[in-house]
Length: 326
Image: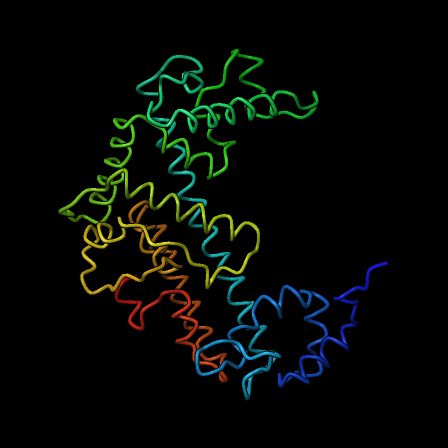
């Protein structure tokens, strides 16, 4: 048998390892490991508290910075958990809005039954994506109609009662990734119409005549970002420090929202996500999102002593004057 390079260790042994590496560990820490697990809590959130060399690289073997505590790691874990909860509500709201927009505008142009299964109703420049998306839609219908008799759902009902499934029913069973691809392969006219709808909603709800309009490229950028963070939130991944490549349309989004003093980062993070959501969420939902985020930051800013809370804000791409933008 092969040697186990990561042998089992008891909770007490795990806490002993942390103490030997310089982490202050109170006696009640064992309960947190029992509920959360060493890998999720420590391996997931320790990096901010590890000592580094002059080049910023983590020192090997690992050693915690002076004064760092188990409770601080736990606080960062709890902060990230609450952040995911706040984002989840906002991302679901946009998912619902986008699904309704796609269903309405696509069905308006192609009112025939099963029009979303016809390849010629989509953008012809990316046939492989069109075929893949149509296949996914067809599989969703097949799966939902193949369930057992006592398992009812709207797709099964429409197939049995009407012989087809309207798009405004089907979109409720699609993942955000599938909605994202659906929008990307829509004909340009439909993409523009949906973008224009978001422009009009933005101007109406904020009672402001924004000088530029929402474009399909902006929607694609927002969708890419939302899909990235939506997956992280749904799978309880570390979220506060998650980054992805900055899209060129971020400068256009900055211009649209008149955020002249906002310095765009080379990578997009939580801050960019929240800014982008202002464009596509109803005002009341965005106001709730921004308030909840600000409240969360204020609640946790005093819980870290060995590290600066500004470092956490930096990982989220938040400027020090973040409330001026939100």
